[in-house]
Amino acid sequence: MSQRVDSSAGYVLHSRPYRESSLLVDLLTLEQGRISAVARGARRPRSRQRTSLQPFQTLQLGWHGRHELKNLGAVESVEVRPPLQGTALLCGLYVNELLQRLLQPGEPCPRLFLYYRYVLNELQSGQDIEGALRTFERQLLDELGFGLDLTAMDAGLAYTYRPQLGLIPAATGPDTYPGRHLLAIAEDDYADADVRRSAKRLMREALSELLGERPLNSRLLFTKIKE
Image (cartoon, rainbow, N blue to C red):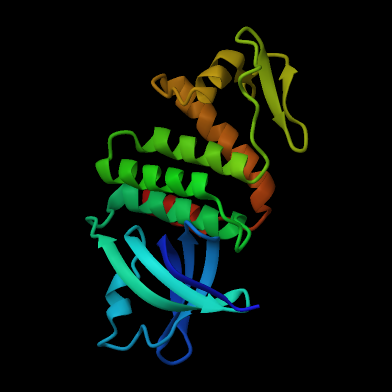
């Protein structure tokens, strides 16, 4: 059955050349979650879509098609944000790649869509990029059905993360997570530098289980730039 959406809020996650003059675009949309669509003729010099289909810009999109790969219709810029730069740009690429890799196509995720807008706002402001990333990663895990129940942790105990099992009590050691850190993460409270370090390590462990062995290109790029 053919599907048609005339207007939906959305963002470009990634685009690449397709055939002679088109683009293959991965999108995060309010109506359908992650979708892939062909923007026909978007690489032609006079195409209006060529300038509109940029990452991190709020768009109104239309598409149609009966298969998983849609045909992109109208594209309209809702607001023009200043381009992300430096660390904020690398973090934005990381967030987009997570969504590309982990979201199933065509499954609406309106709550995660709002958190995506939140993390873009924080990347733009630059005030608390690290805290925003950890909050987004935690919400993504919830959306995927692999959320971590942190509210039941005991502040006086230590925990270790085990694939398939989650967080379990363990003897205190360099690779464990203090319960008080986990309770702070549950509240998205990243004022303490030690909590931020624990959160980064925990999110990486939990997401690695879902991502598998293929590394994230954005993470490799970040490491290369830091060298």
